[in-house]
Length: 442
Image (cartoon, one colour):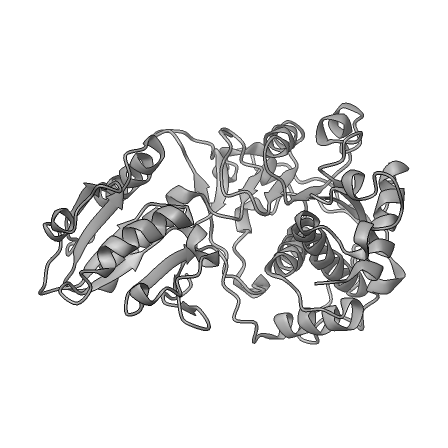
């Protein structure tokens, strides 16, 4: 994809803003839109900042977090957005892009930012007053640690970040300290965070994925034989352990037992066949996240597909894998995802149309993700103020994805959530030309 001219102008603008450590919203002229989707209602502007309402004396705060009992609304909200733009690397020696094409490693962060920008433009056209700080979390001289040290985020009302390690932990700790909601947009992990009810994990953890996959396998098939195939590593043993824990907690009266095989390159067809049955679907959960490992065990299974009916459940990383090899033909495969967008709704059409006009290109999944999360959470700010946590799953706010944010308590008996996580997982069947959603959204 070659959008070098547009990207050069945009990136240069961002670069200048970052070097100046600017904190106000910027709007490159090229990103002007024709207005938001027509079905959206215009929020009522707030004339003045209402007084903070304290919790009633005898009423417990939601989730036992005192801040959640407050109502704090503002006439103007300050939102901080983090995206991995790598501007220091791209423009290390010149304001021009080397080779006139953006490096591939820049694209996910830049496209996420473009989606965010489109959502912000649309929200402002609906009357929302916003001050937006945009930060390159891969900046060398203005990294997250420096921003926190220089107190550049102290007045922030909401943080949206496409960040990984170590930025995730730094921003999470800051959000907890300052009682600011932090929306983790892409990191599929809790990063060891505990005791932070101001953290939202939108890209669900692997534990939630395998729990949802196990539930679908148990409830989606009346008669089944469930088998876990894992390698002899602590990581994959942990995945199998999560499935077994989900089985223990499951109250479904028709649940089938789950059997397990530790496989390696030396595993024989005979060893596999000992766990497979001919008279019912063999629901095989493969814990390999890597493509080499996934295809290695699939080849061992493929030789027996004519004898044993099988349906294979892979990990969320399988969404980008291609299984075009002839030996895989006829094997039904599934993977899990916290996002699903068939791109037929009014929001998707709006985003697609705007990207064609502005960037002469189709929006990527990262662009859709940036748009959706910004639209969803900034709307919550407008509706409920800073502490929207007690009513985060508003169905009327749905964009592409049905979110189901639930409090996560990592230790039994805890009164305050360790964080909130999107627990709505879609089971997707891989197809030759397109993938299909199998389960119904919550």
